[in-house]
Image 1 (tube, rainbow, N blue to C red):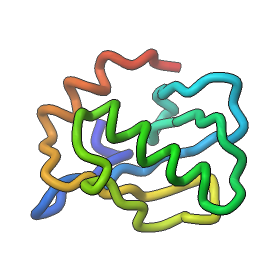
Image 2 (image 1 turned 45 degrees about the vertical axis):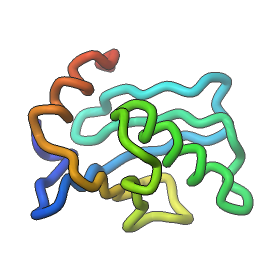
Image 3 (image 1 turned 180 degrees about the vertical axis):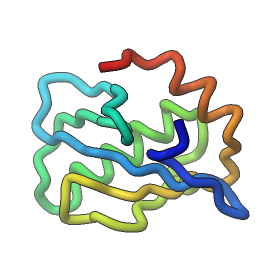
Length: 99
């Protein structure tokens, strides 16, 4: 299960595929990564900010603890979740719809 995330000293890094301009915000599994749908267009950082806010709500952490490390201008992103542990990640993701 850990091919889409890796543990760090201070939290987790997730590999996420982001689909912009979606009809509805949602999260799904996609083989080795997480797929997140956001409603915003990828203009002026709006989709990235929506992604941060969505992950903040999904994992019940402040948005200041969510940081995009790689892929700010692409669909595949690496996102750091500060102070997140593996057990909580698995608990939250197990409630998502697998595809």
